[in-house]
Length: 490
Image 1: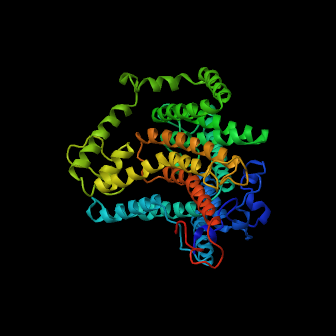
Image 2: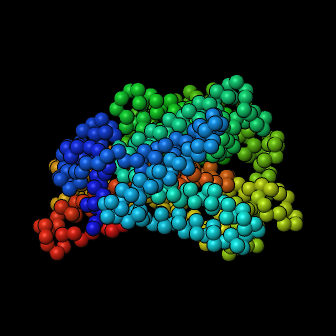
């Protein structure tokens, strides 16, 4: 049975909405009711609460905010693991009840699974097998499961926007804590750099900046497409707090990624909404004098080594050389996932430290195969926006195979098309910022990239579903031999 019909893709794809609303996918996302489409009869369905998506939201909130750190009595409850397992169980049961496979499959999921397999396959050849296996069991296996959950639950604009709001607000809160800590002079490291008040992937100042850079374009997109003033101000406020967090972290890599991200986002916005771009430039100009002098002094060390009081600039250069040397000495299997910091051959100058470059990290730890797979994932993420826009141009031709201005003939509504353009532009900027930050960080097995990857491919899958539904509408009458021929089987 085709998942195009069984999964009920389109406006809601899930939880308990009346058939009349099933034809208006963006009514809940933006508040503007879309006009009825011919897909209503095909995709309308009634369901109860989707616990899989609810569990994903719960897991993400716990991952970002780490409530167990603030309230230690929560530690024995294992909130993240419980919410993830319940969500995955609900997802699998729901799909099996609809006669579907346990999960959808995309090339990106294949790449994530292949990277996990490579971590395990190279573990016997690593310098510490137990450590390599632990990298998979304690970190990457969880990434695989949550990536599968995102792939199967982020199925329409309404859900994606709800997910984005959670990430943006949680990141805004973390950024607020960082700025407040800097103002109070607490939680500081390395001569005045703020580290994340929330631990996990936000603790290290550079990781804090990387995550702020990656989420900031999502906040900008939500601000531009929100119809209420309150939501728009909330998104803008979160974006400025994230920029402030990058500044008080005094991260040089974060600043480089921030500049790249703003450049990509600015060009995209200027093409379609020049007034917004001008306002953004003016706001940035007014914000520059407010930045502390210690921030500018640290940035000057990018080009002036004498300004680097901590010696981190020189240490990074040494680590890049040592990472590349580790790759040359172990080109096939690497030294093991997460094991470069434990790789200490004779003559190593920066012992017990990570490589601080995501590309060299993968090359040194997983060898050529791991590097090829990770490169594949990065390229797929970077080109997902272009693929989505190509599908959007196909969708604009309508069911008749030609461009049509009739709302009932289009595969996507004008509101959906605008949402897709906004989202893909934001994701391109987010991935660009992440990549340039990651060139100075060891984050190959961290959550951020895989969250961005799932959010980048979600619009593409949405359009594939819609185009599949359009083809289904042109199929022969019920009972004919070709009626149930799948457009694309999962």
